[in-house]
Length: 106
Image 1 (cartoon, helix red, strand yellow):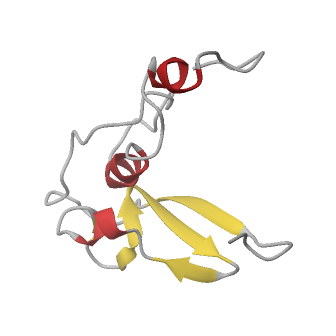
Image 2: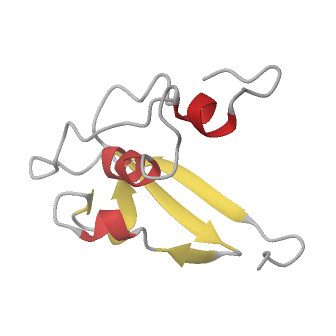
């Protein structure tokens, strides 16, 4: 069903400037709709629904989350890897729907 009225989904972007992250996996795929990404690999995402932290399943593996803060802080590449499962690839929207909504940029 639908989420309750006034449900809040928060996606927070953090940058770690204190931890050396040599063990973090790099080069994971990014959804095709993502434009400019932060230049370095010290960015992490935390997702909350109604102020309750959600642990993104893709981020549970070693190297895909912050080594000290844990799995609630997903590496940015791993977060995009998770989103790639639900974001339509180039041409997929046209194939599924036949047309793009007016003003839609992909």
